[in-house]
Amino acid sequence: MTLYTQISSNLYKTWFFLILLFTLIIGLGWFFSHYYNSPEILIFAIFFSILTSFLSYWYSDKIVLSLTRAKEIKKEDAPELYRLVENLCLTTGLPLPKIYILDELAPNAFATGRDPKHAVIAVTRGLLEKLEKAELEGVLAHEIAHIGNRDTLLQTIVVILIGFVTLICDFFFRLAFYSRNRSKNKNDLIGFIFFLFGFIAIIIAPLLAKLLGLAISRRREFLADATGVLITRYPEGLIRALEKISHDQTPLKIANNATAHLYIVNPFRGQQSISWLTKLFMTHPSLEDRIKALQEITTKSL
Image (cartoon, rainbow, N blue to C red):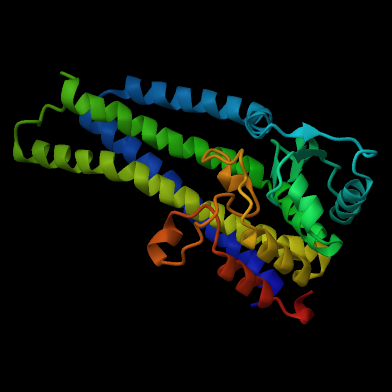
């Protein structure tokens, strides 16, 4: 598989998972609104989802930066880091993002921001100290690829959609047991079948939405890897960087479940199990899969 077919494949798979997620939401909304005959609750859920989506979109970068305690730096604070980011931005035609540093010894990095004009790249102090220039450039290109591919916006949308599914299921779970305005068919066989189907959907839907969100996250990591290599034209730099970051056992103290998907490598150590079941619940593809995909990029494709 060449670089360009990898990029196309990951884009198609991302859209496929997004369509499945939207289909799940529409299906839930249709089923519960018909069964309980309560369109007001569905309208409220949609309004609440739109409001939280707007707030998350507008303030997501500030929330993430406050959670990670990252500090903004100027060019004189890290001139080599700034030069690398500037050169990569010139290559891609993207505006220069703000650069932040996390005072952590564990090597890692992430990008956030609602769009390229308001983007942020954050790297740990350990990343700057432990990676060689070509490796650091590979990591920065990966994060710039996230910005250029609008992954920061996409991930915000996905998180909100997953939360929307959970919200809908929570509403109707409560209605199933406490509301007096249930379907008129509640005492016959059809009503019971609908109730049973709805109860199963309430339990399964949030899990399915979460799995789809994780699948999208993994696809975007593959896409950022491939796009980053397209920027640097040097797969070996990113491969070596991924190996060093993944094998470094220094804990990232500020890591938490809310921000784990943002980092270039899963910040929680000892969680790179390769079983198929574990892969379903991983925010990132396994190191082996990422390196294999990068190694398949031939010199001709660059």
